[in-house]
Every structure is written in structure tokens, then in C-alpha cells.
Amino acid sequence: MFIHEPEFPALFAASRGFCLKHYALLLENAHNAGRDAPAFLSELYRVQHDSMNEICASLEGFTNQYD
Image 1: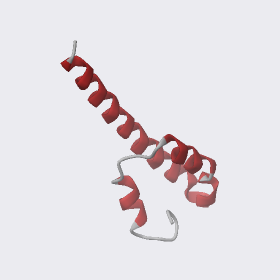
Image 2: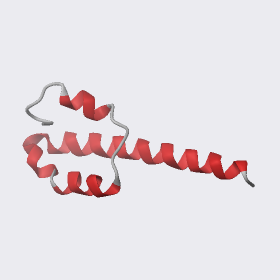
Image 3: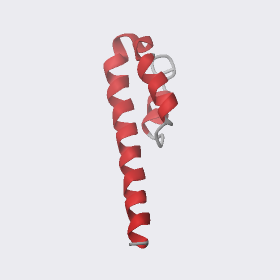
């Protein structure tokens, strides 16, 4: 989809991240993006990194409420 669907990269970039199981599957199958694999992996990493940072910030805020 990353290669053949013109609107998909923007939708992918706007996603909120993936569960770890599906993140691992996306990493394992990144080679299916062919010559676009580096761009796919870069965007996948950015999306997941942003998502994990948001989760960490939320957890830190939650725990600070009870300290």
C-alpha cells in the first residue's frame, strides 16, 4: 500500500502508532516496500517513536498525580 496507494503515505504518517505486535510485523515485512523501504522504515520509526513518547508522557503525568 505504501507504494501503490497514493494517499496511503499521508494516512500512515498521520497514524497514532501501532501495538508492538503489529510494529514488529511491519518491520519484518518492510522489504515488501521495495526501493521505497528506507522511506517506509523512516516514517514507521518516526510514527512509532512519537507514539511511544506520547504514551511515556501520559504515564509520567498520571504517576505524578499520585506522588
